[in-house]
Image 1 (cartoon, helix red, strand yellow):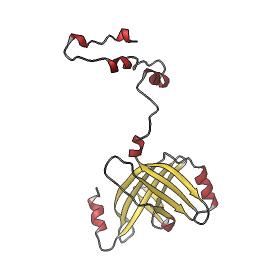
Image 2 (cartoon, helix red, strand yellow):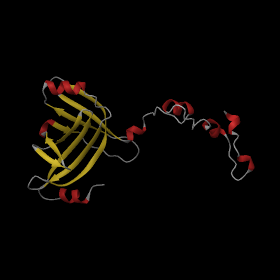
Image 3 (cartoon, one colour):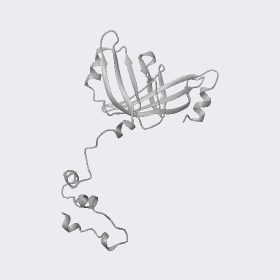
Length: 191
């Protein structure tokens, strides 16, 4: 749902939209925007990329399907390409805002339109030099398998000596008769 101040700002006769992007890499946070120069937003300095940075079409469909978008940086030198190849960026958080500038080039209204993490990335060298990061929203995390289980073995590997799940298999299989004397669970016999 679009913020009312942003909606109003976008309906004006003269509109200057701006995309702001924040990526929290392990070696530091990168903040850029789609314009030129520096802009202060939420107390942080964002550097302008102009035409060398691109964001793919953002599709926000209803339902439980994860959405993805591509962030592309083109026309860069060899040092930037080398850093991109060595970077460990998968899983790093990403935020994307849509903003509208006033006549004095200050942000009049803004709204976060994407929040997720980097799921993949790559470098293309040749006629079109570019770095592309694929960013997915948090719904994609729901499809990932979790390494831990609610078992005695899993709990004991994380916290040696903690036996809170020792009776879990017996509890899962035992029928419970509420309000009856038959409902007591013979835990000592199950281990």
